[in-house]
Amino acid sequence: MHTISELRKKFVSGELSPVTVFDEAIATITAKNGDINAFLAVFTEARDEAVAAEARYKAEGDAAPALLGIPLAVKSNILIKGKKASAASKILENYTATYDATVIARLRAAGAIFIGATNMDEFAMGGSTENSAFGPTKNPLDTKRVPGGSSGGSAAAVAMGAVPAALGTDTGGSIRQPASFCGLVGFKPTYGAVSRYGLMAMGSSLDQAGPLTHTVEDAELIHSIISGTDSYDATTLTKETYPEVPVKDKCVFGVPRKFLADGIDQDVLDTFNAHVEKLKAAGHTVVDIELPIFEKGLAAYYIVMPAEVSSNLARFDGMRYGLSVEGDTLLDVYQKTRAQGFGKEVKRRILLGTYVLSAGYYDAYYGKAELVRTKMRAELAEVFKTVDVILTPTAPTPAFKIGEQEDPLAMYRQDIFTVPVNLTGVPTLSIPMGTVEREGIDLPVGVQYIAPHGGDARLFAIGKKVYDERQ
Amino acid sequence: MTKEEVEHLAKLARIELSPAEVETFTTEISAILEYVSTVKDIAGDSADTAPTVGRHHNIFRKDEVTNEPNSFTEALLAEMPQTEGRFMVVKKILNTDA
Image 1 (cartoon, chains in turn green, orange):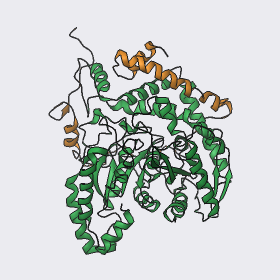
Image 2 (cartoon, chains in turn yellow, purple):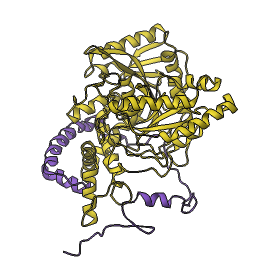
Image 3 (tube, rainbow over the protein chains, first blue to last red):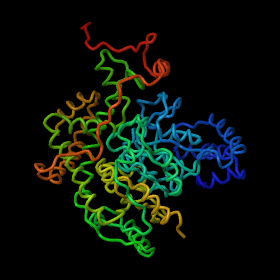
Image 4 (cartoon, rainbow over the protein chains, first blue to last red):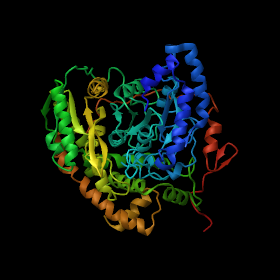
């Protein structure tokens, strides 16, 4: 296991070559991907960039760009010019991206090497990567189990030792929950901190891109490169958007106790409580808080998200790109293409979204859900007057078995702690908090730190102290 | 939620569904709708509050071409299922043969 900061030091000193690391990464993928299925495409041609990086380190040393020669895996709903980007959907099986996403352009400018596109739940809809049109990804820590989702391929790519870090996207927990299931750090930035240009839109008011890494330091480094105002995404923040959120040496943590009362595995709760005790022992203050509206966010999420999904996925028409199924008329082509191109979960969410947006139901569902979001934001703002960081487990369970969760509603409940965060747009960091045992295997579970809008730096600072500097 | 309603939704969403799909989606979407309906109680009486979008606001730019002409044309054409020269082939909307 390499971290980015370790690789960087060794690249600069000459102890390790980007070419060696690239070749090792390809060897790891070759050996393990047949079983794990983390990667949908591997870009072996990128070796030339590793060769060029080696030469640049010899010439420039520490003056070389921050990520020069660092191999990264990228979720396949993020566009890399000239590379296949399928979002794990049949409808985009043969689609080649025609431009770089802003996050990709920025990582490229920083010298990163994109080694492959990772598996995911189709169009990022799911929490297990079982909804991929190209087969599920297995959790490298226990291959009977899922890696989480929807960024499960990205998480597995890091956890199986192929790459030091990967990019994911998070609409309702899709970076944090796989990070929790695979023992990694996962970061979902403040909404608007990172440009969505070149990300395949799922829920446009919820989506953010972020890193999956081994350390908080690495997550911070990647975030610092991909974040910032972008003229191609009008929702990106400027320095003035939110008031400054100061970084603190000792934090007041708020725990929404009632939120944790049911639906959570007892040993996950025990691990969480032990984490709380560790924070207290380290000199932080932990208080109980109440978030009566925030904790019911899941119902609002499963209205807002499908509504946005049904609008965003209307673009797949079998005309301009992607799969096209022959039919007599335009309508026929639409209906057949979308029937064959989309998987079950995608269809389910499009239909649900179509329903909640239809005349007569809009006010009762979408209108109410948006109102709940407004109330959730107000409630959070009130709580953040007295606490610096809110603390919850990232997911109510450790990684579950492949095929275990069949009922869609039960699967949605996996997201109970993560979706309120996207609905309100605040930043959140998931770090491993310990392990719980299932059938003789210790499985990691994560804890989620939530800060006010614009408080990304506060999370990195406290995360480094608690996780990177742990004994 | 009835089967007829699901069939109507599928038509609106431009997705052809098999009878089996209609069957399962009717059950599943009913269950999901029952659950998400709780937002009505959570939102409460909306008379005093209107939904907001936080601190985000509209940002406008000039409606002008920002890239070199034709710089994406070949790549975009290559992605199209059916082309004729530099044009995309689109299906007719009405079937006039019948």
